[in-house]
Length: 484
Image (tube, rainbow, N blue to C red; front, side):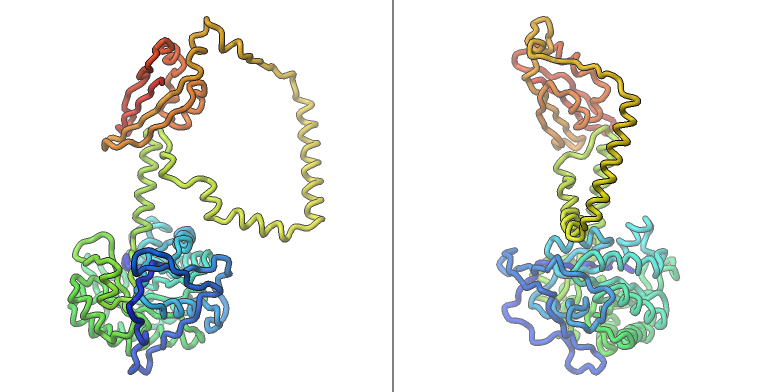
């Protein structure tokens, strides 16, 4: 499972000047026609992304069909095939868990592809070297397919060994609710210590695809089979083109050649059975792989374009930044993290509570009411046994007007807190009322041990304001506190 594990979701779709006539090779006897159906009740809604982009609106309330008949009108495979019939190139990042898949769907992508590379990183914290098992991939995949209504293509890697294992893998992915599966021709990850990719023989690679097609037929499924070859890097461009043709003849629906390094190589690939959809892997790490924008890829002839490590990459960076801030005695700046309300909305708290009310019964209400009354009475009884007369301190306005109290003269002034990162960029610049000192440490925990009240008392006579603090925390960030 190379970093290729794709997660294409409702990417901005680039429209052709005229649609292509068909998506499958007319001469192939074993090739499964790409007959796709519509995405539930959703209908494409144009959204101006550029002069040629639009997004597809997906019904977010539909229930994912993860275990029903694959040939039913609403099956994941049928949905994916219908999406694939639309004109233009479809782009999307790769997902690795239920949350990342949800975010992809919310962003408007109509489908997604899982990433074996990213799942191994997120679930195990280990490299994608064959350490993650078939069962773990099925479990993770099922969580993903059940969390979204858009179709999901699963990264099946090498199929976990020979053709018989490929058949079991395909059948398992069908039962897990996947709309498609990627099968590559790599030698199983644990079988090599070389940094250079190795592939199985051409004959064995073709047998993997034939086994996948047979498994699809035996399950009465229409799952989309994506055949990927890594022979461009392992052997040659010529060998990868020959394998691509053989995969199509064996029944693959979509083709992918990894590690193409030039436009000419991409064009040569797209000229192999031009009507068969091609997938481009824009590996964000750069290197020898040529990175083109969607318009350029469409002109060359690609149908799908994926970004394998965008989501896992930015997730790792964001967590590292947050941990660095916490280690330096701060919390992440407000703009760097989602609010609790946004998190609730993403996870569906409001939807859950609304649906929960639909199933509420009078008996359950009475039971909840009686329980709450009992709890209140019990708590009241416990409180009465331990209750002591409270000590109440009454503060009147006269206290703040007392001339002998220097702090009262700055009650209406503000504290300004600035944080400049060690890279020279401003991380925080806020103002809070000088009288609410307890809130300061919630913003900058590094100020917890500082007697701000004493510093403010000393600066009470400063008319134009005064710099109270100027220091660097353990992370190397400069923290300044002003009285304004």
